[in-house]
Length: 418
Image (tube, rainbow, N blue to C red; front, top):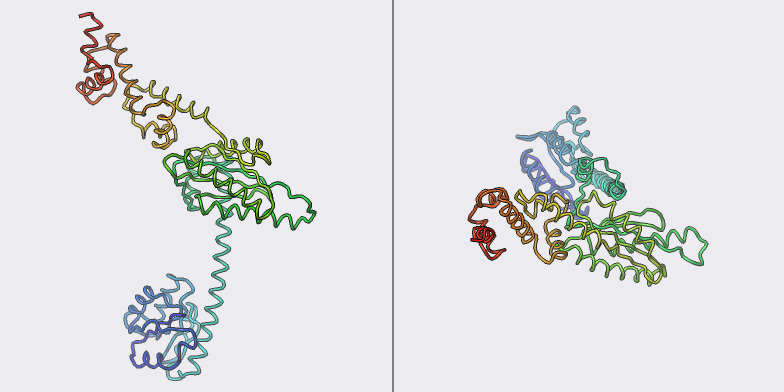
């Protein structure tokens, strides 16, 4: 139902308007009545009527001021039908500039004139809503195209700076959720026994659309069509262990490949690149996916790029960083940020390749450095504790004993043979 608000400071006029027509016959319900312009403005804010019948002269705020205010605040809806007790054409001309579809002289108002005015408003309302739907559809298409260009620049490393990337990301409302990102690249195999170009194009488009609909329901992702037979998808891996979710993703990708073949008798090959923490490194994942795609076949239509060597190198790099910065306070979040990783991902990676936790490794390295310093006589125990950024000499001694089984003082006595 279309909502209608009536605003007039004369109660009899409000009553008369409510009873003059059978509003339900027009698909209209009367949402409320207001006795002054300010009350009408508040009711419009709350009830959001599509049509307002208002007196041009009212207390606190006139009908003209009301129409102007609504035009600036809400756009073309609500539409206004203006009532006046006298023909002041200057007012009327201004009112017609602010979505007023008609004006009615109260002394001449009857069922026929009111009906004609309401029908005119309904017709205009229908046209406006059609236009809004079309504009909304066009807007969505434009936004998707802009986002496609954004992701295309991202996977091809075309952003000039992080500031440029962040500004455009915010402008397009793009959010990278999760702890890692990965790129999938796909190729639809050329269909056999068909020379109809249009039919093939339709088949490929339907295939890509099915893949999109299937995967967008399962994972946060964005799909870009490169040409009729190639597309890429950027996935956000949301769990604390992105490697675990990659296994789930692999399972669903295989199901999608089978589903496409079952529905369209079309074969599709896919490859998933390595996970990355920083969106500005998605080009690495894209390159890895393209390399993996070359190794796919009809028998093995899905390839997952394994980055075991890189992960080992990454952990080795973190270890070197810890050793080089052993004299500063090292925390997991700070080190993870230095390597553009999430703390959870670095923690999992460290445990996987070292067999111990990040904290345990840092502690063992600090104690190893402390032993060298004690052996070389680089200062008393409290100075060594301070140099290695322990909270206190007491805490240093406590940690040293936990790792070595003896206190630093006992360690020195054994060195001296006493």
